[in-house]
Length: 242
Length: 244
Image (cartoon, rainbow over all chains, first blue to last red):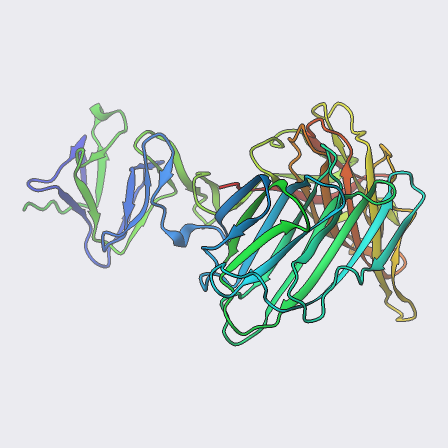
């Protein structure tokens, strides 16, 4: 065993210093290895840091299983559409809608899918809907199926948060899961859950569930959200699940 | 091209334990099959990751991609409550709390939560909530889907049950997740919902669904979990879902 003591090792010429040979292991006995860019043996970048701890160019294989794709914010808009990023990259897409507040009272917040890149949102859907509700007054509560919000081979927007109150502090928030939208073999399954302030006869909490399938074997490549009538505020985030 | 054949390379005595390989703009190539190191830092000394030498990553840079970010973990071991008093702010619009193997000291108690708008000094946010359950007993003599009027709240500041009748035997527990939307908003009330399964003390499984809102436009900046009575063991992990 031999030991070389030095302060710096530099290439004799050129810009590459090689440590070890094939089959060797190079062990860093020191507490840390400091470097801004890590590449594999084929010179493909694994990650880059800027020297201040901010990473960039991180290889996608190091990413988590829930990947942010895009977001859209409505501010007095009539709809929000996602016309890119929905393809075969992921088998599950998650839309998180936060603080959907309609301009007019008692509006259903819903979504529809497109098979033509967003030109038309009118894919046939069969769905179920139910809710648990409870009034702030404490006088009414129930778990019930909602025939008014389900569809049987309909092409309307599917309600995922119903009867939203327009008050300035009122809104609905929830999560919609859409599975394998790019399949050209199967229908497209979805389910959602939302928590919302309902503009019913008396203000109440709605824990609303929707599930169903878009009855098409064409790929769904765009999704739109809107309230039944009028404009709304709110933010929707789109994620892919690996 | 020159070659040095050596087993160990150490910094010399004048190098202050720093061994530098290459100069700016050089590349250092590892021709060996692996590079073994526990801590990787950038040139500024900022941690990229730390491994414990057994393959467990104990720390990693927050810049690694992935929308689900672990913020913190709290473990109860005979404690009366677990509180999250930091990390709940406008960084994320969605926070997820996963509670795992919550085992109470007292039999058939509920696992509850409340929110705070003053950093955890008081857990008494006004809430209106819903509660329903699917239940089934081991004897297969009872099964139902039912609204639970005893578990909901109407403009109440009480703790909200998330899992019911949790058994206290050594193998009994509850687990689930609680999702809180945009707690930092000063415009909207704060929506949440949860789903949890409980091994109820009378040999039932309870699939508990809770929804509601904290009826305040003040920012909710702390959350507390506890049993309706007595202490408990268990783990709660808090995640944020990144906005970009």
